[in-house]
Amino acid sequence: MLFTWSETSFVRRYAARMLALFGALAATAIAPTRAVAMQTAAQPAPAVSTSPADSTPVMVRGTVYDSVTRASLALAEVQLVDPAHASHVYNAVTDSTGAFTMPAVSPGRYVAGFFHPAVDALGIEPPLVAVEIAPGGPATVSLATPGPAAVMGAVCGARAPNDSSGMMAGIVRDADSGVPIPDARVIVTWQELLIGAKGLQQVQRRVPTQTRPDGGYAICGLPDDRVIASADSGARHSGLLEVDVPTRGIVRRDFSVASPAAAVAIRADSAPGAPATTVLRGTARLVGIVRRPDGHPMSGARVTLWGSGLSATTGSDGRFALSGLPAGTFSAQARAIGYTPATTSVDLASNQTASTSITLTEQSTTLAPVTVYGKPNASLREFNDFLQRKRMGFGHFLMPADLQNHLAVTDAFRMVPGLRVVPTGTGEAVYGRGGCTPVVYLDDMKLPDDQSISGSQPPDIDSYIQPTQIMGIEVYTGLGEAPANYDSNSCGVILIWSKR
Image (cartoon, rainbow, N blue to C red; front, side, top):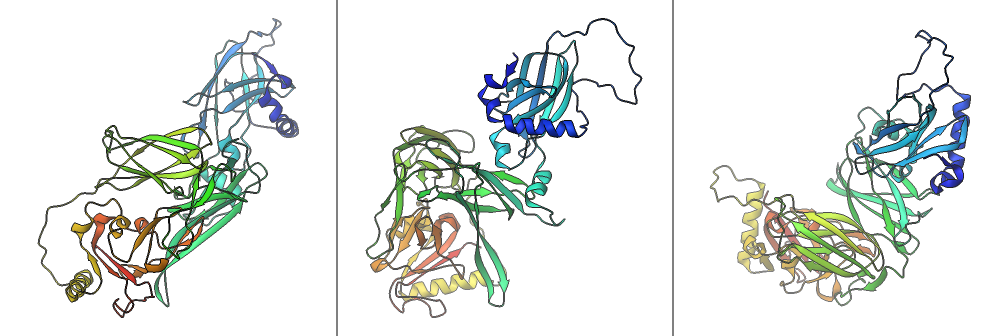
């Protein structure tokens, strides 16, 4: 069907943009990428025909491909426009395979283009292609986004040949209305290990950016690793998300943030005197299923929505349900004994139920015991020191047998005298007597405090190590109990030794 500018909201939305591009087409010659063979100057001119031109409409089929994600682009809005008569346009929307069909297009020369939020998020204009639809059809049109290298060159500028960094882009929207939010803030953080004069140090990097008037953003120069990202706009916050940045590639991550009424901040149960631990609650609901690597349901898995302090356990069918959740974009994490925790992002809206599926893809393997002969190494010396301190009777010690039935390391601390485990915006925090924060070491490396939406929290121990990876834990809650070569405070020290 032939549409006019006034007959489709999509055309009205992009009218000014398309007309500006038509002006550019009129001023410059565009080499056509044609649905059918076009005559060129190098070819002989056809014989002049005195018969009327065939104007019978033909079918046009095509595809839209996303070169950034290397996948078909579903729900792209495709247009064919006659530059000589810009008041007419043919429209179609791609299906789940990225394909579209225009059943009746009059033969002639057209400009083809498409629009999609994923392309808008990159801050680039969708490409235009000149095509000619010949009589007798059908015709085929292939459209695609620019590749990652072209997009990053346009958005981030010139890059060094050995630069392996990536880019993250997306749109920040209101969780309930879906309207893009201008001047919102997106923050990306990650940890780096630096070797300097003071030895090996762990440094936290933090990169903020503001969204454009259309709600889109782009952050360049990110490490090709896992980063933590969040978005906020005034009093509105998303949760913290784990995002994997590809090497020399682009990852797209949209965020939803909710008004204070849709994500109410409350103070969670905290140790006396501890900094306020804030969690978010609302009227959203999340249901889903947790599966094993073979696809079968996983019963007994614990699912937690980061930032809410709420958890649920899957039933025999692997299903779970969480209610009273805040609106916005958050991370849901599933844990099960013997499996590596799996995290996925979810978009929640007030008074609505979202669904998700989480697959535990990696299973921890327990090997039969073996005897190894060789020279003592640093790990063995540390374990001998650990056993020597255990025999002295100071402090509280946890062995692998004490951890084998726990999904997270912090779960084991619930039974340790002098420690208290409370929920935070991202997981669990460990406090000592009076709400103080103990110093935590992992294999002689001091862990930094966790930065969450509610401020500085004790180290998120569960994000560093799993129970199955631990050789032993020492907990010293009394003043002066900890070994002298470790920094301490009035709250004590926690020493964690891994199976290296």
